[in-house]
Image (cartoon, rainbow, N blue to C red; front, side, top):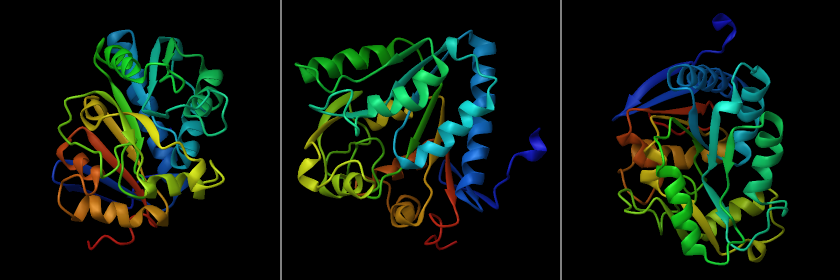
Length: 262
């Protein structure tokens, strides 16, 4: 089985971060899916359960589908979280991350639990506290994430990111560059239609996971990847925080890695 798994064309480390470059996005997604499948199986065998944070976004669709199609994971022993949600959006809105996860994950694998951030919460700060407590109930085994066009991870945009945030979950104002990405991906008809605020897991919450898999394919991510790997570690490119995390692997394709100097 292992021989059929696509291998990276290049591997290197940037500070503490592992980086793997693949010839194509499908090969990247397939390798990541096999890696995550094996890790979840091992965690369940070792601990009886597993806890994972999943990301939404177009970069995750092929990976999630492949992971589920591979089979072999006892999802009834897995507790899942997601990492962000718009404030004031219903769970049935086409851009809702709850809907994304229900359709692409929960309805297909029936996990033990899928804890959702309530975008409709009448007391948003209380919702931050509730979700923080759920995350902290036990160690998080896995975090699967992506990188935004402005370098964000989850909704930690440059203006609001804090690499050493004291919070686990917070309410943030979305950067216009982040909102424009949502429009360009077809989730909203205009910049004005994107909710101005959102819930997000903070960078320390994401990085608390014992293993991190970050998928960032496509040409539109190339500038952010260049900044994350070749710029300074800091909030100008929040994804640069991954360079402090030895448990993290950044998955790239030829397009997203095209601007790297070496």
